[in-house]
Image (cartoon, rainbow, N blue to C red):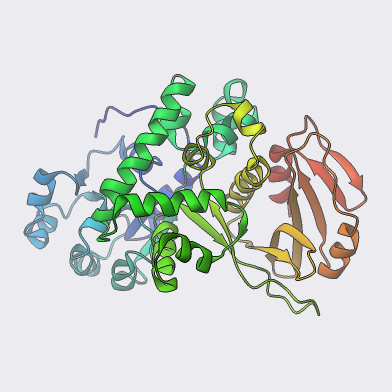
Length: 395
């Protein structure tokens, strides 16, 4: 099957996708709009002739599925790819019937711009028959592997974010315009398509407020007062933004450490480029001189690490007395601590060593825009984002 593929940057999710197609009846690639799901899917099936590709945003493809059961029956020897599957939730029971009749792996490859919670009907109907692959915008590791000379400076990825349209734009101006267009399209078209009737101007104000609170603990009451809506309404808005992969709510650590821990999650915009567009940060000079620079670097680093370490449970540590660590990773008995500092000469707080002892952390890193990594103390390393990602994967 031949496609005119747009620029393809190898994705870390490609291996997982191919493995799932070999072993699971339904493979679902989920991620935000414009993050590269269709490009990945087309690349994975590009050398196959037994593929039919449907995009539910195209009226002609939708018409083919007016009698979906009959259509699937006529294509039973093929891999059926369905893009923007969240627009056809009624298809999931039919897919289940087909899968149960055929009983073979690699029958469906479905793509969606919403999380499995938002398309809950599908995840319940296809339980035991589907494997979910989450695709994010480009990670720093993916860009580094593609072209170290072009993308090696973390400032580039941090400033532009990871969406392919922004990263691959030929100039800064085109990258900025792409992000502004993305924001407008998401508000005016995508949210209504998900079935939410919320005025675009209201969601724009809410999104911008989230950008100003990026990296801070969530204060839903303050958001509600500013927007003139109730606490449940704010909870609904947050759920929409989280389930469409626009924000990450990082939960606080819940271990019993005989400390009074903060119980409110922290909110981060998952893509730093979108964060900067909402805050009208256009250049590196604007970014480095902006009050949000530290929180933006923190959010960018955390997103790179959390995406790279899917088997580890992420949280943050903060006590009522102000002791804090940006990111805690836990798996089994292991506990790792990570601080993020947007400084060439980063320092940790005076009580950092004591906090490490309370947490019983095995190791700690301070991720900073430094040229090379070095030991700050026997258990604490000041590190580049590349080095910490390499070190974490050895744990």
